[in-house]
Length: 185
Image (cartoon, rainbow, N blue to C red; front, side, top):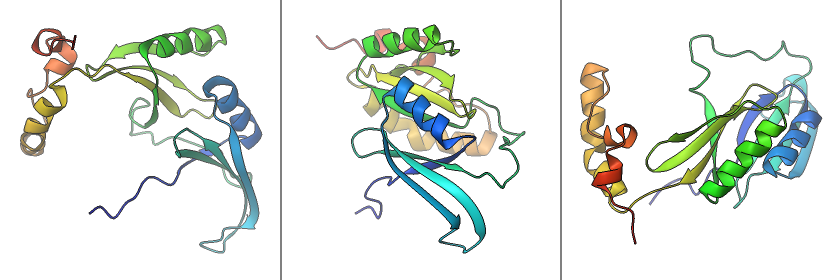
């Protein structure tokens, strides 16, 4: 039995809580469900005014942000590439993914993709705070998850020993999955 029931919320920092709430509602349909503001951090008792907002990410998932006006401006870990840290949201279908890409681009938001990851296809873009967002539409074919399950620990062990990408699941990005795993009829 797992200790964890679900992710309660994921929190990020933002430049402007109002702007962030409006952006997520306009572009991703996430409604603002709660705002909390304090002059003292409840857990540490530090005097540090903040605005904490909570957005509905669907199915009981919550995305939260903190605006911290007395702190230095947000930065990024200079040793971590911008593509690494991101939050991914699932959308209903490839049609929705492509429609969303077109709508975002029409609003002047630069979008990368769709990128074919075999199990799903994704688009990527940044929110106004510089956080990378991924939208993913499932394209899973029968047998794919079972094939990946068989090699997951072997791949980790190979990586641990060599720090080179093991080739056990190369089919995901080289296109072979299209013949290895026929689409269900």
